[in-house]
Amino acid sequence: MGNEILYMLGVVAVGFAVNFALRALPFVLFGSSRRELPAWVGRFGDFVSPVIIAALVVYSYATLRTAAGAPCWLTPWPYLAGALTVALQLLFRNPLASIVAGTVVYMCLLNCGCRTVVNEVEYDIDHPLIRISADGSLYFKDSPVRDPNELAALLRKNNVPKDATIYILLDEGYNDQRALWVLRHNYLTRAGYPRSAWIHSRRAVSGRPEEVGRSLGGSSTPYERVPRRGTETNFRR
Amino acid sequence: MGYTTMGFVAGVLLAAKGGLVLSPLWAFLTSSLWVTGTMSIAGVQPISERAPLYAFAAMTLAVNFRYAFYGFSMLSRWRSAPFARKCYLILMLTDENYALESSCRIHEPKAYLRYCTAISVFNHSYWIAGVVAGAVTVCLLGFAVDPDTIRRHTNGMEFSMAALFLVILTDQMKGLLRHGK
Image 1 (spheres, one colour):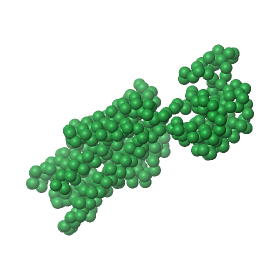
Image 2 (cartoon, one colour):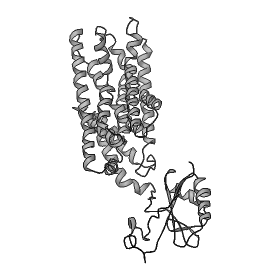
Image 3 (spheres, helix red, strand yellow):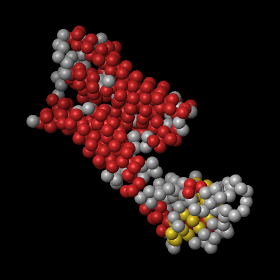
Image 4 (cartoon, one colour):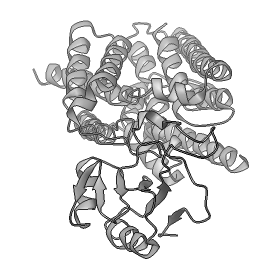
């Protein structure tokens, strides 16, 4: 918290200094003397500012993300909302109305429609993407994977961010720790997914009642988190 | 009026997306010292990512580069202003203030300076009120509603930065085209 306050004080100071310096620049350069203003200054400003702002538009589009962290510029939504913003600004010249309308439309489009366009999957602990059955066969979202090399490609195809924790569901009876380690280290970490964890499934037949039959997140196989030292390893550490 | 509403949006954004403690305090400091709507909205993302200060400075420089050209047309008109007041007017040289001050028809220097100062003080206070009100609203809401819910429902709000740049670009292009004719 102390760090955060220091950081924000720094941000405030830096923002103040840069803003004030920019605004004071003409007065510092030409304020005291009665020097004539070179004509190119105005032309330069007219030309450079739009170029910078255009670059910022591109930058802000490139950083748009969905809630799951997938890039948004591949979808049509920011362009539709952007076209609306520009059109409103040209028609009514009310910056606030244009910005708010564009943003609200974008939020609606993003939260209602984006999922249908960008292939997004849930990959939290309630929805493990990878499953290993008792006999050691590998599944990605319930479809069998023959070659573990395909895992990284599948994760990429489903827009799973690289820093997400990849949960691996182990069926009851699977206990080949070495194969599991090889899978995580060779096929996930080396392919750019350094964070992975495994969880155990448990058949809902016996056991303590509060643990059994609790279907998490609508998953068809009830299982529970098995707290265990070293369940989650960050290989990059 | 536009200032207060825009400030409210910026304040909400800072408090909801910045991930800060004491966000009303930061809302007050940024709004009173920066006085730039663009950076108040565009700066939220680097703040939430805790970007290094030099990156933040570079971004401010790029985003607000246009301010460096506003002063040129004020040089001669503010020549008679006392130093402290000149500093305040320079700090307040925002898009809207510039538009009002440069299109003002008052030629008598003293009256003109009074006009500029009044506009600056009023707009400054509207702006601060808007930003702080936005941040306080989100903070109070944060006691009643789970912050995660707020984050989920403000998903996509970062488009306001892109929209702001689009609006500025549209206005600048329009100005350029009119200039060229």
